[in-house]
Image 1 (cartoon, rainbow, N blue to C red):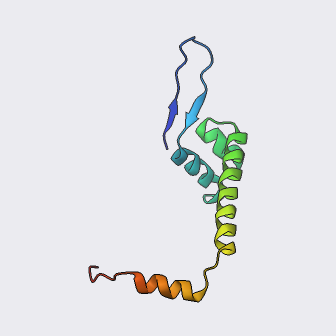
Image 2: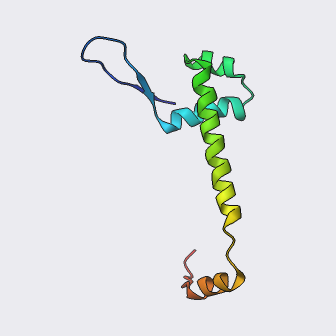
Length: 92
């Protein structure tokens, strides 16, 4: 997991920014590896609200993607046309 720090020209407080990969890895500590929010945050040097917000963001993205897939069901004739128009290659 990598994080990147910005720099401040004025010497004031620096706002840290984190890559999507870092955020997903931090969330996976809680969702997949059994850490509590507090444990994960403490081990990464973050406030637990950051990980909580990232988790909510990723869960809502998954739900919206799942809902949009459920709402758009192609009829069978569209599928047949799409499959018929595909060129199959014998390269595996």
